Length: 50
Image (cartoon, rainbow, N blue to C red):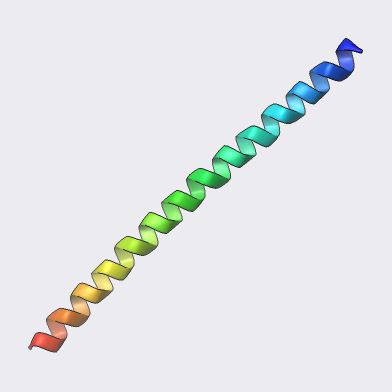
């Protein structure tokens, strides 16, 4: 029984680490896209003013 419990604990930790990695990757991609969109908007506004 204890052996089975340790495997479940290990699987749970692996799933949790995968979830955290996915969340971090999503946040990084979102912030990068937001920054890129702001740069494109700034470039567009600069070009339209001239």
